[in-house]
Image 1 (tube, rainbow, N blue to C red):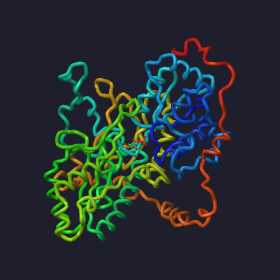
Image 2 (image 1 turned 60 degrees about the vertical axis):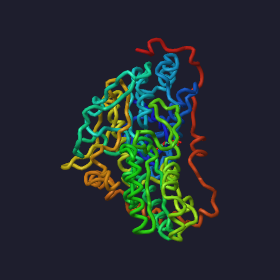
Image 3 (image 1 turned 120 degrees about the vertical axis):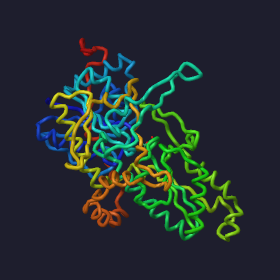
Image 4 (image 1 turned 135 degrees about the vertical axis):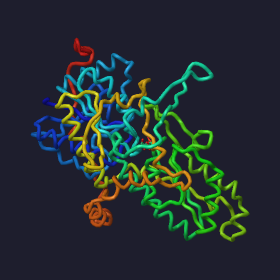
Length: 472
Ligand code: F6P
């Protein structure tokens, strides 16, 4: 393998540059050239394939800083449609003209779907990333538990799981944690911690919405910020029980902090917030408004009178407030756990290509005896019998629905990731950079301007001369 390409697809995470860094560092050792494709799959859909040589003379370009959030390559949610055979051939032809022998895609479930059709032209591997921590399995056979039945309206299918295991061991988990998750939890837990003191001072009920789509891992991890109540999408919300608990806590401590995962559902299984379609091929949807909806429900059931009588607030609406942690979860400097394992997974992805793997995923495993170690799985291992990749959900045994908190096993799960997740350098970085006087006078120096000057493009013959046998 002489030259490989790498791209970052889907939503960004704080650890993408760290993954690219690890891949390039390993490629340098193996004397492999690495071309970074600009803006994910959309860079390959562009006939000129804008790209950057990331390791001239087998040393990494200085812009590649593993401590910096975002991605120097840019990201997009554009994917290649596997049914558009001509487009696929064009992409394969373009990469062949660039002399690419293998491709590393850094991404999540949508990226696997985007990558798979390309795996028939040249070896492709995935280095995982997602703040949602939903790329993986609770145990090996989990996808095979999905069954489908014709829907009552006809025309489409209803999917459901049958025979889910009630208990799991932490060693069973495939891909224990994805780069980006730890930093997202770090940000979310910090936000919760800060909102608590203002809720406490002003006798308010705070509802904080965290990201994660259908997966409640960020909400679960936000337990580090000590919210009173955590609601995860995997466990349907029983409003009556929730309201009772909020009342008890408010009577006791005059404030309540509730965390909701954005995909949280009511007792009928309906998402609390509005959902709309995204155009990513994993079928991901966009959630918004779960916290708002819950605030409305609580305001109605408490009523203004409750807060007035206690001389705390005029209206329920001013006593109960919502905040979204939002995209701050996805941005900024990755903490040590993310940086370290993202870089390791990037290096592992290069090794997989060199060892001849195709359509495979580098994974991070945990075991009681060995702690964390790298491994890999075939991408199809994640697919159900109907070829869908499902987001990994928080296993029910990780959550105590009576206390609205992580269960004992959930706590154990989190501790493996977070107990030493923050490095000394993370702390030092806050100390030295947060209030650096230069921040006041120097304009933000990002990577886009410098990277733009490095972009090269494929010129010359066009796609019309498609190579014969590219489908080979
Ligand atoms: O999948 C990552 C994620 O951050 C989700 O947690 C969130 O729902 C979604 O992406 C937001 O996407 P966008 O930034 O495109 O609005």
